[in-house]
Length: 282
Length: 316
Image (cartoon, rainbow over the protein chains, first blue to last red):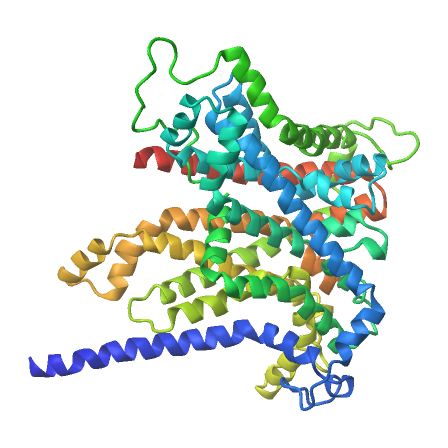
């Protein structure tokens, strides 16, 4: 009895220690590639190429950051990434929420068929229709333009479905009260539904922004001019066989590519994780 | 896709105004209204989803190169998908990639979610943040970092492993190791995402079940096998299918790390579509391959949809 009482807190302790040790090892392994990006970005080239390799720089330098702006039109690439990912997010939120409102709140003929069509189309991987989309964009003369990068993604079947589900969860009394007062449907959408749907819009916005910021194949296909690429696609120009760019410069570029999302994630962790988790469930 | 398809009825209906239909505009007007709201999205989805679907289908029966004349070749492109050794090898490589990536990512996600969900774990938030962080890193950037870590001359990980007696050599030039390496990079990036979904599933298991089992004298392993696993089976199947679908689309880190090599050993379906469509301009053939990818993905989505649709109806 006494032995039991004495042993109990000890066993609890052992489980916690085991868990913490295991998770520390896992976290260290997982964070190693991120650490190598951060540390190498600040290492002088001589140290990067030295043997044996080290993790933490002996001497810290900013030369890699200066050089990445010489190797690539990097300022322009950052701007392109912001306009592309931001533009897609903004347009998709507007168009998706409008369509979702009609599907959630207006009882019209054919709404069910339309909903099924939207659900089927959200299962289509974009890689499978890339060639005809490219042909269409090329016919419009939109290759190497923001229009070409953004327009094909400015409405998204998943976003429509996701927002429709959220709008349905809002109580009808909210908008019915406005309807009795004679408000137009657009007025109800803008002043009643949207303000109540801010969490869902944020969630979809984060998810869309991250996906587009990080996408490689899309900017690779729709831009051939180095000035129109994104950070992600621009950096790949420096690798490959015969890539003579020092790793420090690559890592400086990589750090700049990761930083905005990492900062956003660390600032709004809970919301961020929820966002990718709930929207990932498609 | 965990939400029901049918409209959910509001639990409370406001009283209808005297006579007439409650708070609904006339049918013709409603149709027009709906159209106004739907028009921008429908035009865009029509142009960039529906039309490309039909267009890819038509292209897949031609020898189009994007310019000049094209002729109808019937099922020739599809025949090539299933006979050309290079394409068969890409299909096989994609299957191998999926077989490496999916179980590794799903099991790592499950194990770490269980650890994070343990009631006696301190610093839960910090661990969750650290483990989820790779998700914000693009696969391309992840590929740069891993290529550097594994570099045979100046790679830190390679150096450490050599110190521990493991001779990896140049993994990206080794036909046997290149595929496991590019799969590892994807596991590193995505397991945190699946882990978060598992965590959400774990939190839905009622605590009373666990307590009842403790009272009945079940040990930790028995509780895991008889409570946690069965209660998590839904989430597990869901994660498994989305991980499989993601595996079929492998491209970014392969493009960066190996370009499909060495000797085509990491050439996947999407790599093949990109190369045949945008480098060799064999649009007909690339479209046929796209349709094969589409068919496999739709089949998996359908399994998921039917499976979860039924589960949901059972639950209601």
